[in-house]
Length: 324
Image 1 (tube, one colour):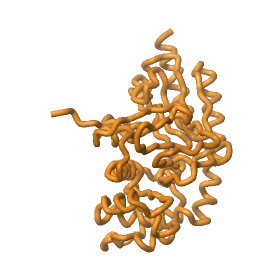
Image 2 (image 1 turned 90 degrees about the vertical axis):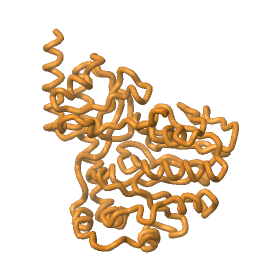
Image 3 (image 1 turned 30 degrees about the vertical axis):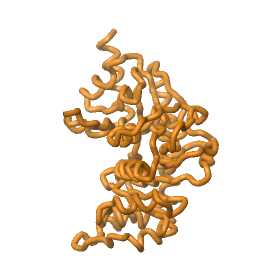
Image 4 (image 1 turned 60 degrees about the vertical axis):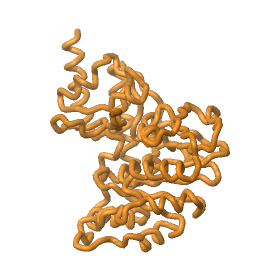
């Protein structure tokens, strides 16, 4: 029997809880109070509407909005729908979120990695995943070219864009919206697709969903996602994250870390020691080793509050002292 294809993520790793988690790319600021109250008040004693009609109307055109149990479930379901609709190869960003490739490989579909848009050259009916801004790099392409393929843009990190304007997307692209990272609520598995048309891929993706794909809490989160209160809170959160990012970059630069540009609250950094992720973890601090992304020697870090930054600095100084 073949070994199962398993994803690798930041966050919980099966060890003791971390005191300061720089490995997650979710916002450390938590949810807006009004949205949190709405989730706490969600009716857990009744099934949600299995068609989620009111939610879909609230989020846009009900005939084009497709709720998902978070981004990972949406990626798996849409990849299967695309295959059933005749797509025969899958293009994924490299480096990029591993679930795009895993979903394709689980179905026996060829996976074609690309580093820049010009490398996307389908040789068969294709599904192309775009992540804007991209995980794990935090980088962004100003404008994507038109592509002869089924294009899906993962926009989980758009609300965490701290610099620059939103990307110009290809016409006819699907969009995957996952608010939980920007809201600091990754434990709530809720998101949604916006489809360009109610075509065969849409019909198959809709029919592949379980009867109740979202919990009552997930519905409440999405119902408040586009509210004025939530969006105002997010604007303030981005301002805070910019300040923390600036301070944290300076801290790492002073300790001889190389750092790549990013438009988000997370970025790639190369520490002077290859074992830094393990040694920090022993001290209760998490960073995301990016070997699984094909980036040996690098880690992904996210902007964290000043107290966490001070703990990181102290730990790195201790490690430096031990090695001197």
